[in-house]
Image (cartoon, rainbow, N blue to C red; front, side):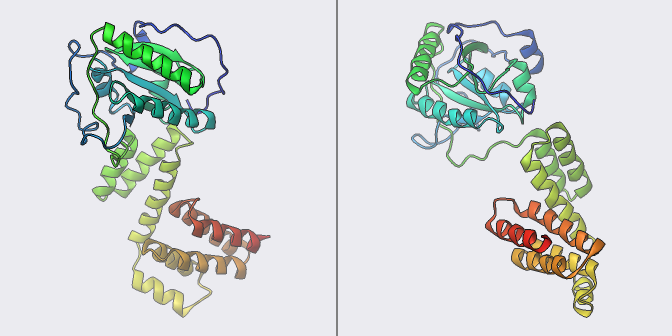
Length: 319
């Protein structure tokens, strides 16, 4: 699921427990283990000192079962959102603010429906934002559109009351403010391969992530970085720099030196070298310099000020 239509307000379902659909049970096991408990579960992802952080976590297929089981202790509010819907992204922050007001009587789990299509499909979400809750491993529908903050507070107050009626009276621990977000499975797989020096394996994992979700910006950025590492790892840095110094018209040597500069942290030097090539060459050489510069933009990141400045210079050099 890479795109959702914008939702429109409609008649919301009553706040009541629903049996977990078979499609949900098949894709993500929502069965809570044991009965209701008091206190927070032993959960590394949620552990922190009192007063720090908030009550918000990012749900993925890797950690979903943990929080489904935790819903036997405290209700877990789930918000499905997507980058394609700025409205849903903004509403996530509204829900987070309201959930934090309950001081642990609720936990918020956010789901990027574009990055985690299995979870979105399991809940049969048709729009974003979609808000529901897990209570004792069961699904409680809430809203499938944005609502005013006061109305949301009233809904969540009713959810807490429903939880108490069902013996779910535990309190969640706040999540540490500096807790890193869990990596999607294919990203974690790629990272492990990188740490093992398996660049080809990491490339394959990131390519698979992009095939599953072409809008995965992090995978695109990481793949560009892997490609840079592959090029640089095959170089004799001294020989490359000597070749470039001996023959300023050697385009391949200039491309290679730009890679070495960037991998060594000399971003502006790399950009300057390639921009000069674009300005002073023609035909295939000019295209090669432009293509390598765009590749390095992806490595650094589109929002980096150095990329923004170099991209503007590239446009002037081309046109």
